[in-house]
Length: 149
Image (cartoon, rainbow, N blue to C red; front, side, top):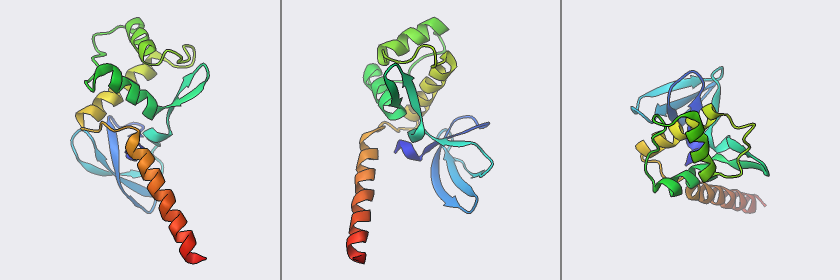
């Protein structure tokens, strides 16, 4: 599911990929449900392609979002009332091995903002569906290969 959620530079909020056209994507805002095009010149990033720097490498965003969900029991995170030090300390409780030098406070704020938007849009499965989708796609590819042989 998280692979179909997009961040588009210069546009507030997150978007769900609805369809692909020639030189554009059709996306739907998670906040208000409005559909709009995202063109090839827009900087579009799938949340499934994002990872967080840690001391031992990178951790996929889906794993971090899952850890936040466990920590907050699926509730939104109120970061507006926290100062920078409190946000970093709270994030360290969720992902203790995050790289303190390469993960900026603004990145953590954005991560919590995305988490809150996903929860508000009733997107609560960050990992499991993604694995099932990958397995289903692989099974379909193998079936196609078997038919062509």
